[in-house]
Length: 73
Image (cartoon, rainbow, N blue to C red; front, top):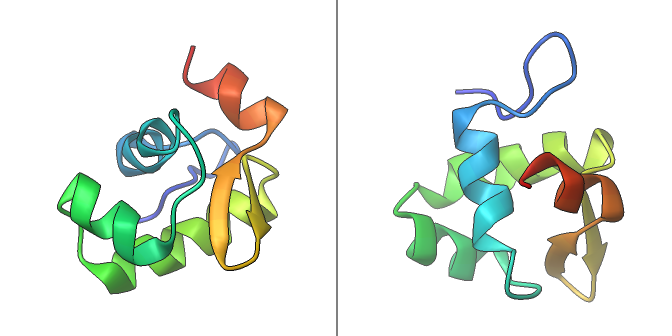
């Protein structure tokens, strides 16, 4: 299940991952636990979201970029 649609906008599962980061940066394992999504899906989703500029990676944790913050408002 992709996190980014063909038009470049986050899908429902992408929004779920983005909303899990609203309170701060998390590891993929923490995101999987918080969202109930399988870890493999979270990891692939984070790659898509990072490539789309919606999340930023720092020291193996992911946080919202300014674009990601706008996407969930």
